[in-house]
Structure formats: structure tokens, C-alpha cells
Image 1 (cartoon, rainbow, N blue to C red):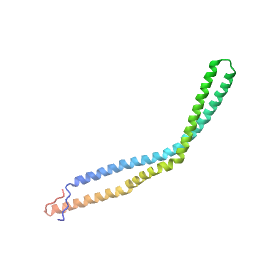
Image 2 (cartoon, rainbow, N blue to C red):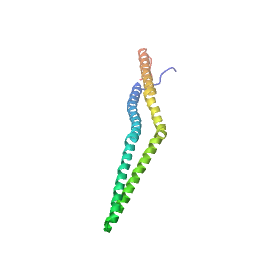
Image 3 (spheres, one colour):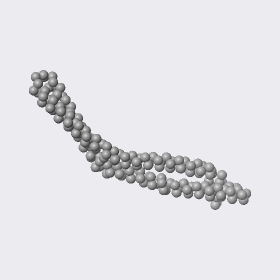
Image 4 (cartoon, rainbow, N blue to C red):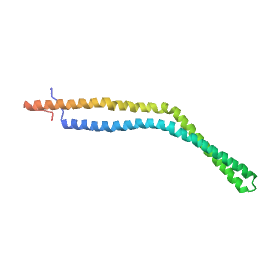
Length: 166
């Protein structure tokens, strides 16, 4: 009962090839995810935060401008101009409040990014380690197994004994 019961070495070889393809694609995908996590943090800190700080300055200047126009309109005798200017002030205040809210959210994300994203990124780093170190060892062991079984098949075929390994 010391026989190998492998039905197809070709199936083992095909499975090994599929593992290599999987490893290549998965490694690339995981690396892209980890790069994206780094890019997102950098984007929040270097692009979004300065963008919303600049928007607040622009929108504050616009609010100051429309407030001045409202004061001028109050001294004017035209009633329609006053309503238009009051609407412009409301619109400018809403735009400034939006920019302040966006900056506040961006700052919060900058502060909480590591706490929220790091545990998830750590799982991908573990997967990346597995794909870089453990899976290649397994593929190598499978290659050795196929060679050993092929050698076994050759010795049993050469001795004239029936072989289960095909």
C-alpha cells in the first residue's frame, strides 16, 4: 500500500501554473491598493487642505465685496438692487460656510486617517507578505512534488510494475 495515488501530474502542473498567475495578479492588485492608501493621505494633506484654505480666503473676499455692495445698495433709491444684493450676500455666506465645512472635514480626515485606514491597510500588508513570501515557497514545494512524482513514475514504469501515477 505504498503507492502514490496521484491521477494526473498534468493537473498538478496546471494548478501550479494557475497559482503563479494568481500570485502575479494579486501581488499587483495589493501593491496598487497600498499605493492608493499612501496617495490618498498625501492628497488630503497636500492638495485638499490647501485647496479649501484658499477657497475660504476667496469666498471671504467675495462676501466682503457683496457686503460692501449691499451697503451701497441701501443708500440707493432702487428697491430691486437691494433685494439682489441681499440675495448675493446670502449666497456668499452659504458658499463660505460650505468651504469652512469642507476644510473642517478635511482636517478631521487628516487626523483620523491613520486610525481608520491603518487597520485595513495592515490586512493588505499581511496579504502582500503572504503573496511575496509564503505563496512562492508553496509553489516551489509543489514544483518539487511534481518532480518527485515524475521520478517515481519513471522508476515504476521502468521496473514494469503497474503505476497509479499518470
